[in-house]
Amino acid sequence: MSEIKLIISKKMKDSTLLKIAKNYGTPIYVYDKQKIEEKYEKLNLAFKGQKVRFFYACKALSNINILKIIKNVGSGLDTVSINEVKFGIQAGFDSKNILYTPNCVNITEIKEAIALGVHINIDNISILEQFGNQFGNAYPIMIRFNPHIMAGGNYNISTGHIDSKFGISIHQLRHVLRIVKTLNINVEGLHMHTGSEIKDIEVFLQGLEVMLEIVRNFDSVKYLDLGSGFKVPYKKEEKETDLTLLAEKLQVKIKEFNQETGKDLEIWFEPGKYMVSESGHFLVQANVIKPTPATVFVGVNSGFNHLIRPMFYNSYHQIENISNPKGTERLYTVVGNLCETDTFAWDRLINEVNENDILVFRNAGAYCFEMSMNYNSRTKPAEILVDGADIHLIRKAQVFEDLQKDVIEI
Ligand SMILES: *Cc1c(COP(=O)(O)O)cnc(C)c1O
Image 1 (spheres, rainbow, N blue to C red):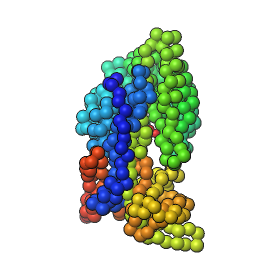
Image 2: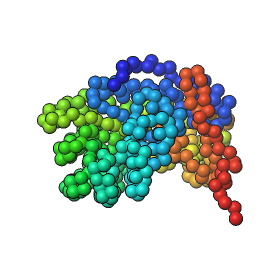
Image 3: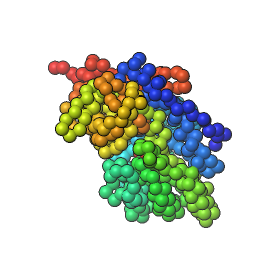
Image 4: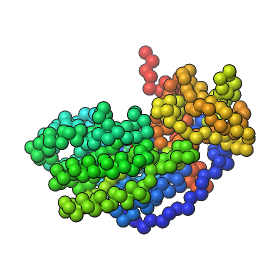
């Protein structure tokens, strides 16, 4: 691990955001490069001196410029589709630093990933068999297990529970071992990922215990991937997962395990949200202030087509009025402009909002732009990267012509 120095970060200023809104228009996503670097250093610092590697889960935010930042800080990449694998290679990641963790893909996609030389994580018995029949021990793989732990901020983002489609059940271990032995498969790593927004480090430690028991069955295993789910604070009073404490407790358990088994296990993590969430700011403009008998709506020039997390996961994003930061706080319900129930936030105290004011959604780096779409025939927003004093447009806003460009008129 390289020398660690903690960057003293200068928080990106709201005046910079206002300038961007004025020059590039809204809605628009803005990412702060320094925040991403700072988060990675924090991770590294927490696990300093341990045999730990990080693979950024790029489904959170996959703009190639973001991937390059991630590569330059020294992280690996976790991918969930063959296209993300290709993005990683385009961004300059060595294939050995790319991990492919797909779910329910065809063996043809696994073969494509093999041809690209990346780590492959197999998550069902059917593919394990197909892989073994065709490759035997010619290409090392990882196996994703489901440890059956209920965790995470929301049922839809929990992946380790009994109903989950992810991973191979730990109760199928004997079957897996039979296949691995018979087909002579080289299993170099094991994996689990129990969900997103896990604050309680006991969940990771429980998962670790379960997985260490499984590792004992595989002589060839060199690393154990504990996935991710590190929580970041969305509300002011929330705390992020205590990584320093997690690292301490993890180290004790791994040491014990290594001493007992003679192994030298490497631990992997796949942080997505942790790396990019706080770097992101989503800027919108208030179009309409609409008092009704029930509330005062602020209707903005965006909708769940641009930021779906509140409607999809019932998630919370801090919303601030940066055009009137000293205004009297008033109670608002912030909604989008789609013809659909499209609520970003109920009952928020926000500094008085006037029409045309610029509002910012905080923590808009992860799973925000990435999940955007063209519903209601609305275009997707631009993306900006702020690098110190430099402001770079890193994705153009879509225009009207983009909306029908793949349609074939007959
Ligand atoms: C989504 C995902 C992650 C990242 O989860 P975060 O909660 O964003 O950190 C990591 N690993 C896998 C396999 C995933 O699917």
